[in-house]
Image (cartoon, rainbow, N blue to C red; front, side, top):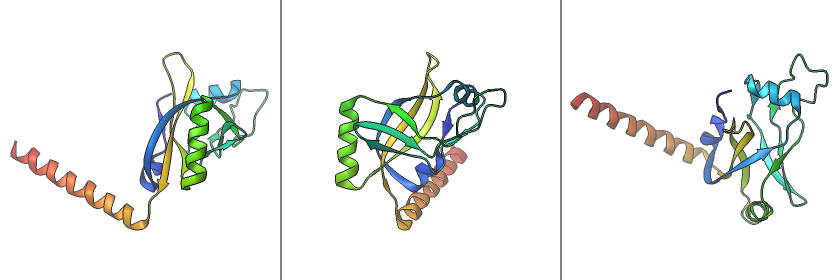
Length: 147
């Protein structure tokens, strides 16, 4: 499986901080993930009782599995208690959100989720980011033509 990314998160949010977390999965979910049958759209993480959970992530049921877990079930994330406390505090005090940016398997074959502490962008912020990207693209094209 190649890295599964949540590109919409980069468009809709200003990323303040990133963190890698493990994710608790069942066997059929791992097989389905390895085939790339998952989506991070509309998913988010939320701290509860000193633990972090991922909501809204879709993992398609693995066709050959006997047991078929719910595709959008709540999944526990594996983080250090200090990280969970720090981000919980940020979410409560500053009104920030935690969203997954990507899902991948590390060198040891473990499923990992890259989480981000984010602030929502306004429509004006989105337009400004688009304008900056467009200007940067034009500069690169002109330099390429020259060189």
